[in-house]
Length: 382
Image (cartoon, rainbow, N blue to C red):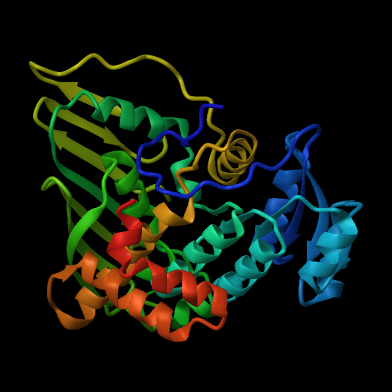
């Protein structure tokens, strides 16, 4: 497969391979709108077969299965559906507050998990999931779906010809009227959407951030209760700056949902509008750019392909929970920086989250595993 498993930023533990002959048998947890999008995609994927559907609203799940003509086991309890369907893996498409509980249950049932972003609502809960992944020896991966575009893979390859990279910028300007919970969030842009841009920056740079300075505000015409606009500057290991500017209430000349990207380096500049092919202007000293094409499928299909490939080969995927925690930490650090009007160190966010994870962990085995780390830095440096 030509997905993202070899991006270089994946940090993880050894996990048990799953699969063998025939397609991977998966249970989908969550039958809402996003769940239905996954059902449609799974129906056309030869590498998997959907065998079970779980939702607390069992009638909703039955209607979804019937509408899509799916012959699956339907129920309200993951353990029962997984056993009845002889499942080999779980796809978690529940609402974010349920992710930690569903992911933990699946891992301790012996089932690897592919989870919609965010893998958990907080960094502390994500650290708990890292410990659970290691105890159970089952893979936990997030679907950071906007990593999966052939054009993005090409952008990364072109950026590799620039020599040292000094500056990465992304602009994200949209004006969606979602209604519902996003309209009531304190930081709808940062918490619900910006993680995509933050995560892509980590992918492009093969590095993790060191600090952030972020400010948020809400334009007078905004239809959101919380701050729907933000600027953030991250410093990455090695000194590269990543600048993010975005708004969810900016009608007119809207950017792609992937944002608009520019990467400035020692030997030129590459740019991507988020939809078409990236462009570049190289100066003297630029390295040759390979012309190979990427066959990665876009968005959730690409995440599924990487998940299945990881289970078959044992290759740590780019979205493994050990790596993805850094993307979620970027969000928490940005929110804290905006709230306190100061520069925030990512290491401090991770250590504070580690203390919280230890204090709040409900499972004795997971708490003991967390305690053995000594610190978040000691674990995540591996």
